[in-house]
Image 1 (cartoon, helix red, strand yellow):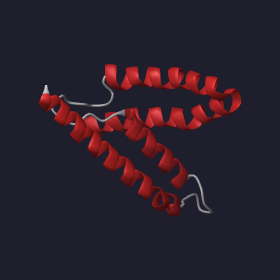
Image 2 (cartoon, rainbow, N blue to C red):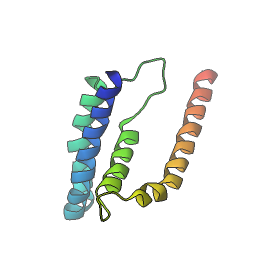
Image 3 (cartoon, rainbow, N blue to C red):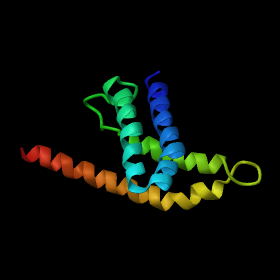
Image 4 (spheres, one colour):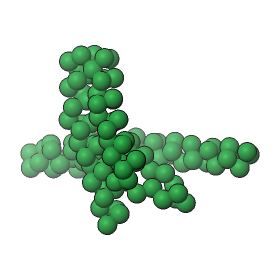
Length: 119
């Protein structure tokens, strides 16, 4: 059940970000982007992390909303495009970026671990 709750939390955040943020930033420029950040990410962070919709046990790696939001954006493009409503090519073309983001996240995790051990 924890996985389902976390998936719902990631998906809600991703749907709001992918459907609203770009429109606000396009219509109002940087101010619209900042407003979207406050209006979307603030309440979603509260719901997901403070209320606890996303399960982040203290002894596990912390999973932030950005990972879920990224996957919602990718899947939205995969399932919402193409002649039959499905375009696997979009998923395949995003794999190098996902791979590099994963490597960056792993390096950041290793760096944080090294800093914590140095304390």
